[in-house]
Image (cartoon, rainbow, N blue to C red):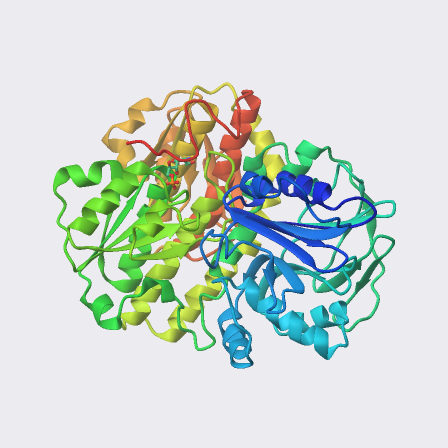
Length: 612
Ligand code: AGP
């Protein structure tokens, strides 16, 4: 997820561009850059690091320019370096492009463009678009909008693109596909941005663009067409948010915004992972087939929420790839003399890529000869840099301390790894892989369905606001979900919460149940071991002792003994955690709001724990 801004108008472009980028830094902050449309040529400046690094480079005299584009990056392809920062230019240095999203077919595009004589200077997917647009603009007689319309037909993936050319600097062209782009309409000036936060201080008149719509702005005009060049009637609206709400997309907290971003985060993490021939694409792993077949053990290292993703990985990888998996709390791992050697694949899961416990455990495993694969959401952070390979989740920046979209994408990532290992080891055929991958691809729309129940869920939660403790029960893959639900409640509502395996109740925890104790039970789905019956018995056991029971259950499954039932769409057993976790995130969120806690920055916590 990146922040993009475009301006064309009567004032100096530098102020609206930098202010817009500052408002969009929450969308990405590992590098930033601008291209200004001066009278004679493009002025381009870009720097790795935070926006302040770019601003420091722009101190002093700047050329006069009344148009330009700006970008603040969350790296996906190519680390956060000066050369990989946007904008990206064609070889003549006259066309600049900025991009938010993922160009799935960029390597093939790049090869074709290099074959036609274009030379590349970055590792990004975006630069391919700059060279492609340059070619197509010449083909269309200098018409940048026509070039953009044709370029889009050649691109696969999700993207928002803005482009500017030195020959017509006050004309900025944009397009969006599965990635946001809004237009701001000013007086003698017009704006484009990833979201309205970028220009809300200048205008509250906006136009939301539809899929594959191409927009051209000049100081006096906004024109929109479809890919065939047919004019589209703009749908203008009034922005009712203030600037702070705009940065949160209209939500009161980043956490709720990020809960709602989960469908896209999951979809983006799956993008390009299954080839047309139903092969799982995991080029990052860089292990030969022989090395993969020789693996004897997999060890998952992580902390907190990421550890719960590791627990889910165990169920999937052992079931699909028939290889032994150990899940280790990173903070405990190296103190017990673990049995690690070159036949071990260690998977280190970390949203931030900076968690010291996980980093130290990774170093210990590496020293013992293991191959290290990182699953990470932050490009070029320390953990991926010290790993042999990395699979990036594409959740975009997660601002709230409580991990939500990062968790779901971590689970998706380790499931993709499980399918890949199963396929390479010859355990699973292409058809079965395709079937399971298609089930995962259906999850974003199923998450959307769960999100439609958020408001009733928030209301339900408020009925438990006076509780002093909440217990969570799960079985099989529902057990890590129970642990995750308890962790969310602890870190957000500052209240006691515990997750249990349902079968453990009778071994002690049931003594905790007293009249009024809230118990949230995740009813297992689609099992042939009668686990659902066993969980229904657990529900009866706690209800008989006065518990107030909330059950999360698949649609259509009969449930007895619950005070409330939260329904989730049906999905194969291993994928239920992706859907069952969402109500628990909302429950913890609302409990924190009800208690007046700082939802995005809970007390005593940091987004990245860089000490042991
Ligand atoms: C989860 O909501 C917490 N913020 C915390 O448990 C977190 O998952 C843990 O600190 C690991 O962080 P990482 O994924 O950045 O390594």
